[in-house]
Length: 522
Image 1: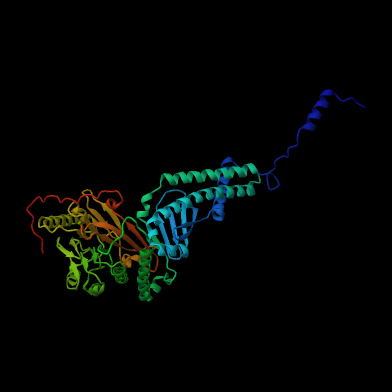
Image 2 (image 1 turned 90 degrees about the horizontal axis):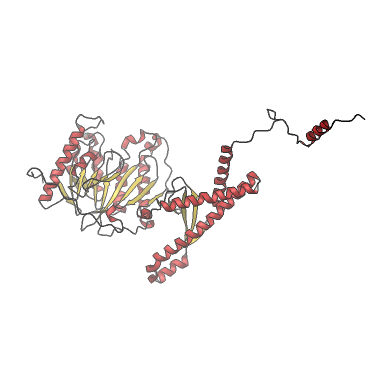
């Protein structure tokens, strides 16, 4: 046998001990390259979020007895946060309670007959019901927090084990899910808004209303049916809102003056049935129309105004830029209509209103030269009339103008001024303390509703006034789906001075007139 050199034997031994690594070859038969770190991290986050969501859906529900009701509390992923109280099948109550990627859902399942009967048999227990409900909610929230932690950790860990098949990676997914839930809880606690209960938003889609969504032709041919159903929808929703909303900060009593503010009807005949329904359901004392009831202000349109006499409440009106003097003269002849112009003031249903018509008449929607200056002049004329009323000992409670820029001219002269024109609602407290309330289009912008991709909503509001002080106490914003839609939404709002613990500000002091006042028309 030929002897093998020692160096060659050593090299052969090393080659035998070296593990064989297969060469990577391109194509389907080769091994794929390892994923990049950012892709692995993104995949882990996706597994964590999906697993946590599945865990909440599966075991994240907590049954809680709140007073005489049986409820179920749940956390749900959400982009906006907040709290949603579902009162099936009536609708839902939404609160802007917090801003976080989780939403609290409370489902009212049923009313327990035994606990309800106990309250009926022992009415003295009602005095302690508020504390009992608060304790029940606190207990349910603690149970929900604990159950949610278990749910997200279990769901993320289980899904991580199924995807990665590695216990360490699965436990890491569960820990990351718990961290995300804790961060969401901290964000919710930091942004918690206890005053959100003062401004709830009730919404619902009544299953009994027929579906009238279709093309414009079907809506026109069935318009009578549509407006009747829309009026019935308003009736039902306002009844449900009155029955289900519990607003501890303000409850209108029978002596409260209720004003229905409408604007920019623009020849929509469905508006009259809606207004009549609201007058009946809310027991409205007076209706205020801040203009643009017509579209072109022609004499041929005057017959559209006749239903005003049968709405069931006095009608206070000011002229808009789509209403002509022909329109105004026709309204002055109708029973129960109070036309205000040139700062004239009228006392209607216990409130004193003063208003001025829009100085512009633009039925073709063209911009006229000097429009801004004319609005400022109209506001100054209305402010002068308000100062005259103050000097005469008959101060106005509410001022009305169509254009918001004209309404701004009465800042400091009156507690509240109403306007319209811009087809969406706004509320603003001006520099000298006057509150400006701009109403949306109660006619859903009229024929212009079908110009865009989606129909404009129908907007109106109920204003609540104290009969003694004649100051605004609260208001309800009512928004209905536009032409062909059957959705409805009602939300209540309180002036800042009516929030608990806030001292009401003094009435805005009128500014002195620079020249001797000239009395307006009676």
